[in-house]
Image (cartoon, helix red, strand yellow):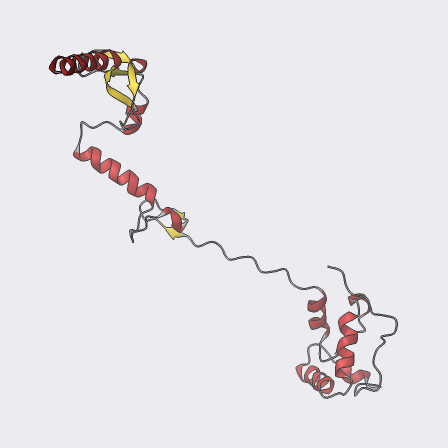
Amino acid sequence: MSTPTAPAALTFPTGGACTGRPDLMNPDPNDPEALETAVETCLSCTAYTACLAWITITPATEDPGGVIAALTEHERAERHNPAAPPEPPAPPTRHCPRCGQDKDPTEFPASARAWCADCHRSYARDRYHRLNPNAQYHTDIQNRTRKTCPACKKTKPNEDFARNNARPDGLSSTCKTCHNAHSRQRRAARQGRA
């Protein structure tokens, strides 16, 4: 950020209440009464607005010090060097008591449950398999390379089964050979009736 420079025509105002009183306008920064007296003198002065305009455009390197336009040196330094903007607040988090992690609130189900969605999924899957011990995990089904056809009772490679995305393993329940034979029988039965 560039500091505005004072135009040549604008000089320190004269004729103010502080003229010729350096002891009043350069108080000890640790003396609150002296600072308050200097500020009150500026605020009641007729040249206050002119002083404020002058000090606002004066670069920090040319600041004469003391109290000017009811501003202390510290206040003027803050104006010339504004503090860095405050850091944005940390995004809100929510604690999951099951996994012990703080997570984004969007990772929790819409219901007012305490567990995160991952913990709910894990609990539901484990509960299902605890109640149905013969059930197989979905990932196990998808990773198989061979499958048994219930019609012919033969174990065949996945390529021998038609694709069916509605099924957990993505394959038809019967092999292509049995499916085609069954389709031919149905077609023959329909044509024989006609």
